[in-house]
Length: 580
Image (cartoon, rainbow, N blue to C red; front, side):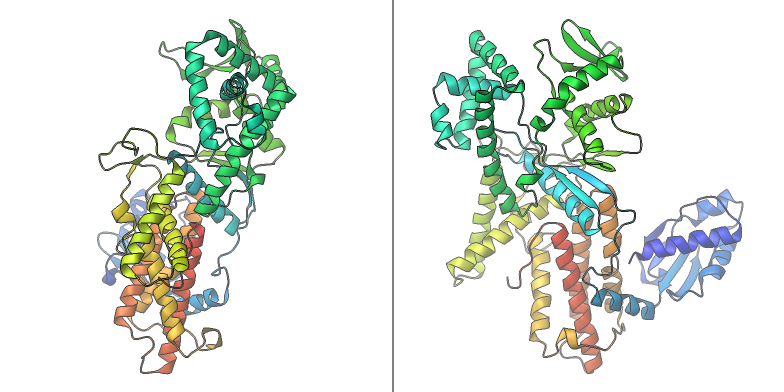
């Protein structure tokens, strides 16, 4: 149910009936004051001026066309130019009943159904995931959950950096240190591999022979050398097994089958280079293959060159991404591709998109979206790092969250069993980190604050989770079984009506996330819903109502609130708790 959409469509039809054929897009907002109803049409003056009509006269004509619809209780005009809409309580009750019996809260599947590739998380091989991977991982997962809920065919694409120069250096270092057998016997950890990578990089900078050896192994790997391939495969396996455990810890839905590394496109690259040359998009210059784009200028104001193959015949990220677009359109049949990477990748993606379109690898109809995001900052508004200036490992951040949650729970429930304490701390700690990130607009940087995120007050995960547990507790205390209530919901008090309206806004929120990939909208909504419930709980007796019919009606409202909170948190990848 999307009330704003219903009102918008009614206003649009009224404008057509009046004889105003242009698409004016009436703006519907929630009213801030009770005397102005539940919703307002907010751009009536603009529409009236465009048609040389007084706002009052235009409002009279609109109201005459829509006033008899059952959804509206009353429609009024207020100066200088607003239409105030009061929603009919009986209509609200009927819509709530539909939600009550629907496992999906009566939210319809999107039509038409699309195949959507969501590219997110994308860790590097031979390195532990750090906090920079958190936003991409959880933002992408919310979009995936939302799109699947709406019935789309969603393809998760964990585009891992499993190809390139770093593997040449690692292979050279493992051979130099005679560590191949240790690697084969699983006696080397991911932390060891990361250390080897750092040492191999330093050796490359100091030792020209080692650098040449590393380059040789890169080319051998790209050409399918068995020994290099075997070492590479083991490095990928160790890294990704570690990452799968982090995904599980985070309640992220990425699985092994979703891994689509750069290596997947390796066999396509020589043909793409050849084809781009044939189409006269790419040229050779000083031994390298380059595409010059007029859409981007260098410092001299000349077309920017995008290198797609180096002098030593090694391929670059741009080449892989061009192949990636081609594969996702031709093989996966994508209608829409969404990328979750930080803003620094924007120009690179744009260049690859433009080249792919010029080469006719993808059509204009394919929707390409970069859902970029800001950085996690410390309280001094600088990138969030360890005291010695290193980037914080994601696993260490999550362990810290769990330990802090554990200490908080011990203070509140000192007699809780160890098993329950660990389970509760894991859910609350991980949820707090995720919610804190998701509740911020992804387009901005945000300040990381342990104290705020684990608070039971304000727009936090513990507050929303506690609101859910409190509702479950009320329902359990009742002697009336929810599934046996046949009486309809009866909305009497203002706080009941406000809660009903808020519950019915859920579909509107889901559809915004489907379109824009902005989970903070859901977080804000769930917080407002929890506040509306608190107001309802404080002003309306539920279990001790004077009439049994009122008690049953309010229990159904409680059930619907809990159902919506649970569904919303599930979309965010956050678990609910029956007890806190």
